[in-house]
Image 1 (cartoon, protein in one colour):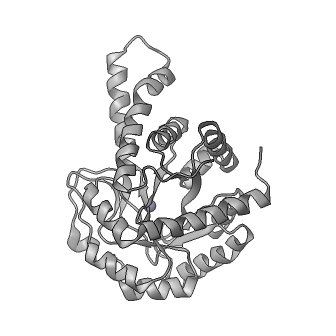
Image 2: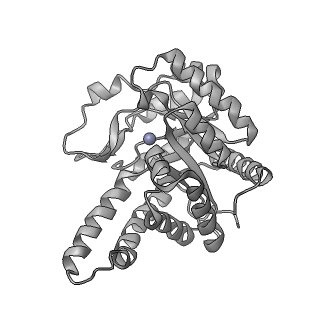
Length: 305
Ligand SMILES: [Zn+2]
């Protein structure tokens, strides 16, 4: 059943209060990509097992594939069936219109990222689009996340190494973060401190000193995108510094695909692929999510739903 505006506002109020609580208590919401029902189930089972609050998120590709209202309904059905504290994030929303659709669908978290969709977007374009979404989000109280510049990488498995000299050029600066937060009124700043989208053959290295400087420069929440392939100790330190949202996608996709390939090879006569996914893929993705929830210090922190 569709949520009423009143229910949406209550959900957004709760999400906002919980982000503040996470910062005060030094833990972070894992924001896990929802590719399909199997990945959603894996996140839900991990949240139940760890008694952790979670975000699930969709990018425009999944919105187009699943349908924005279906995402909201699927999440709510799982939320109440399993009693999980769970919110929805619209990730890398490519336009103001797409972000508005997410707000109207009742998503508690909205990430607006026009420069990922259009690499030629000027600083003024990015600030104006972000501000427009911040203004529209007053309708429900949804929390708006953004950054002054798109992130490197892509949510896939990469064979090349990481060229940190290149990546460093796109790092956040404390001054830039402060100016952007002030100009846009965002709720959450997506920091670039060595995190980048995708899984690489080498572990990622985060600049925690820079993260602390960014933390000291702004009042709003801080998120980290591109959390896959990052040694867990970085997250344990990042939540102590005050990160309250970490996005995970590629590590889940890697577990999904490699497990599916193996179980298909092992069961050449089984044509119910869904059955094999339920039997092997969901537990494999769940294990990835559970280990992240431990790294984010969010285990045991869920509210009763
Ligand atoms: Zn991202």
